[in-house]
Length: 303
Image 1 (cartoon, helix red, strand yellow):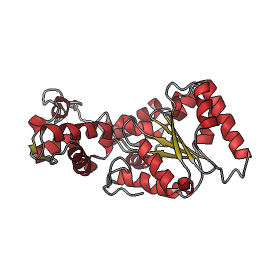
Image 2 (cartoon, helix red, strand yellow; image 1 turned 90 degrees about the horizontal axis):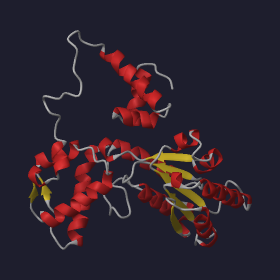
Image 3 (cartoon, one colour; image 1 turned 120 degrees about the vertical axis):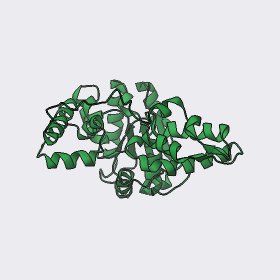
Image 4 (cartoon, helix red, strand yellow; image 1 turned 180 degrees about the vertical axis):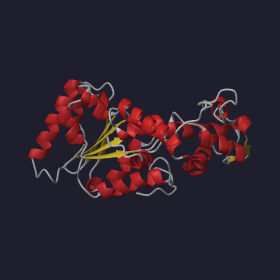
């Protein structure tokens, strides 16, 4: 598993510290047989990471079966678990596991218990990798997801950062995804001007890498072999260049502020809104989780 450039169909691309930390943890957990919960917004590459863990793990000699949980009822889950070609040493990837109905959750828990009781609990035949774009711990707190199933699935959590938290990876992604799209359409890949790159790095990418991949394909078709300028970019990317001068996001009062006190108070409010979930609080503040932890320590904030 590596953060170097690879075909996006198989590997995550990037060299940012935020992504490297996740990949380093994934390398370590791949060598074990434990169940894994991969957390991340839609389009961040959760299934890519699941596939990479399977290829690096002891289950690599067995099949990797992916089951989409959205809209999957109990009967559908039973068919997958009874007839799916998981085999004695395979990997079962459950995408968007938070979408399982309560009956399907109960059935999955029964199968996990049966698999573990059939052999040593520390060497399971089937490794389960679940993915979710929702806060599964919060779903447990709301009673929407079974607590006992959550603890079976979340032996090791891995959280993929959104693209907006690793803008330094955008040039690498543009190069790799652009080359793939150009090959697919028999074209030469486009190049990006410095101003276009600046806009792309400042855009928030709500669709994450999936949205960037779509942009790369569009540019490969519309701008093959030539420079992409800001005028060639979608309107939403151009609008994200800078806030309007007449509409500041924060107005400094004439009396001034205590910046340290304001930062500490915002962190406390974010933690309260996130019910103590540090990853979600970090997203509310536009920070990485590590940066939030550093600032919590700086202000002696405990949660």
